[in-house]
Image (cartoon, rainbow, N blue to C red; front, side):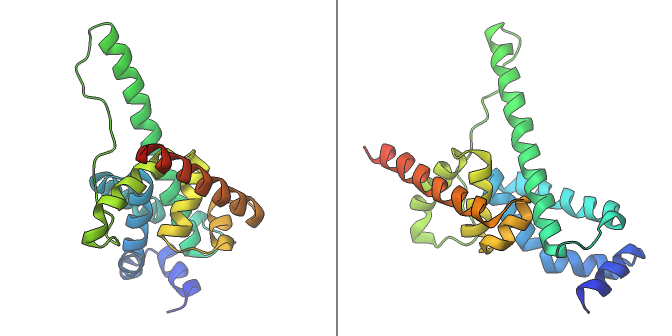
Length: 187
């Protein structure tokens, strides 16, 4: 089935088409979310939200980009929304603790293992993912989509709705920042 046929079947409410969409893209959506939120449970929640949003808003999909690009864009947006929500809760929790109203623990990125990382590389991967989490938002997205999800600069630019030179710049700055972060950790 072609992508345009799949999209039309989705717009017609075909459950089999939706199941095919989920089966085809679930791993990529999950891994994209995992690369950004760096928590397996949160990544699963984000992936479910992505497919729910696709189901609800497929009629608004114009086909200007590939369906997979649209999915990555939704996954990225949902992942960032989750991180912002957690940061907001963390800030509010700090204020509560200052005034003695709350005893919720700080949000910290837990140790986790990305599915694509070999067993012997888990320690290095954990350090890398911790460093990635410290990157500015746009650098984190570009790096995750390009290096972890293996999207081309062109595909990353479509997902991020920016230019290829802007993605190249983000990747360059992300690499420099990661190098600085990882060098500080070693010292």
